[in-house]
Length: 202
Image (cartoon, rainbow, N blue to C red; front, side, top):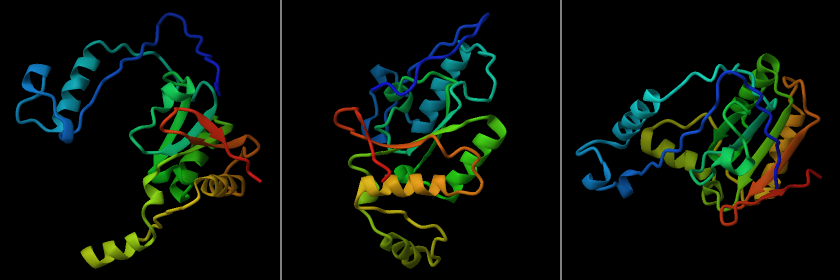
């Protein structure tokens, strides 16, 4: 399923995409594979950025997304949104958090995205096997017991991913701060197949 068509029409400069493979501390490459001896994951990221910057050319893009769309999705490391949606650099705004839930801070980002940077469409993406399905609001109590202070934020845990997508769509559509709520669609990304399944808002 292709949600968006490519629409970059730049002259004078070509936008290229560099792919970087990263490892966590649980899977650190050997010295022969180019690991930084004694370095941290962040050290490797900074080192990779140096190589990236050495070949970087300013694409001359505006801050406004080319496709006038904002994508709200989970922070799960298995979601490669640009690849999954056929997006290129500069196409969209991407807003990510635990669960891809529409919270007050997501509304804040969407409001700025629409009112100051010209987006009109909103795509919401949850996914199968989300970590928020495995915890409850008791997590806040556990934190309070550990650190002596109860978080002001809600965990936003859920059991029914489709229903949570519907709730997120409803939060967007009823926000008084958003200018454009007629093109809001929600999906569940299957981490096993890579396919999006649209959720009926009804």
